[in-house]
Length: 180
Image 1 (cartoon, rainbow, N blue to C red):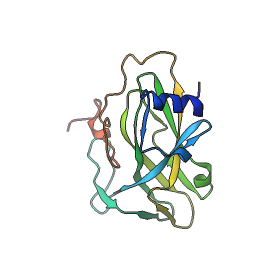
Image 2: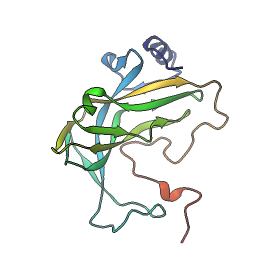
Image 3: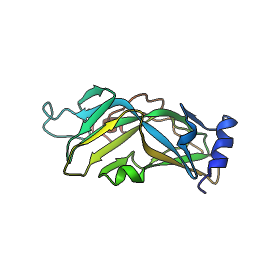
Image 4: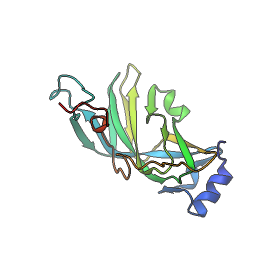
């Protein structure tokens, strides 16, 4: 079941759900808008031949009040907001329609697991033929919250727990990664 604005406000007031900092305009009828932070990561392609799931990826950090994404380019960004989900709630990360209409695809592997705590790293892809300039502090995506049928028996406590700022892929730490 997708949670309404009234339920979200009630959960935040009771400290069952945390989204900080939160503005009144961020709460939408069935979601909470999140703003773009000021920390970004770009794959350092000059230092890597291939991205390998078993090796750590090298990123170049960028901090600033704005960033321009070249056409057909990818980067990682972070939300300004930090979230803390209870063990019976999940959230889907969706791009705002107004942002998608300029050709910016926003993802974060689709969702936030129950029990997650931290800032959300966003995967941004400019599908347009023109550069897209983004400003920190602007609403860029939304969280759609769903209550689970019961509390997760194993809530999220993984490698991205308590992340701050944009966080690069940690896939090389997966248990099935080869240790060569």
